[in-house]
Image 1 (cartoon, helix red, strand yellow):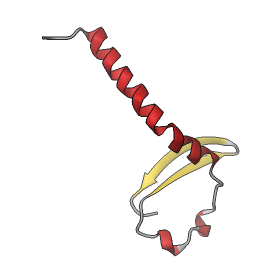
Image 2 (image 1 turned 180 degrees about the horizontal axis):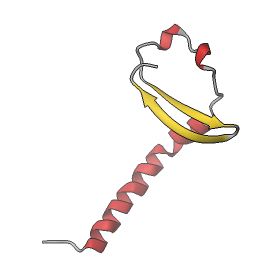
Image 3 (image 1 turned 45 degrees about the horizontal axis):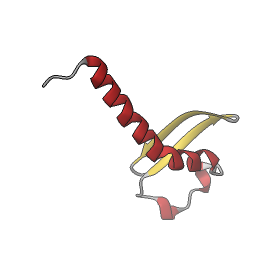
Image 4 (image 1 turned 180 degrees about the vertical axis):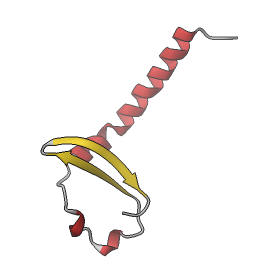
Length: 69
């Protein structure tokens, strides 16, 4: 049975909303985290995956990740 493009789009959007709700607490925590200067990163984090954000004053302009910060 083939589904219509509208049904397929609705299914994709429902899955997107579910994913965003799962990510909400992580994104909220990330946005409220105290920023640190890269020189303040301790060596205990070397070799561990990290998430980072670039800000232009108070506006977050980029969020990325790295395998080894």
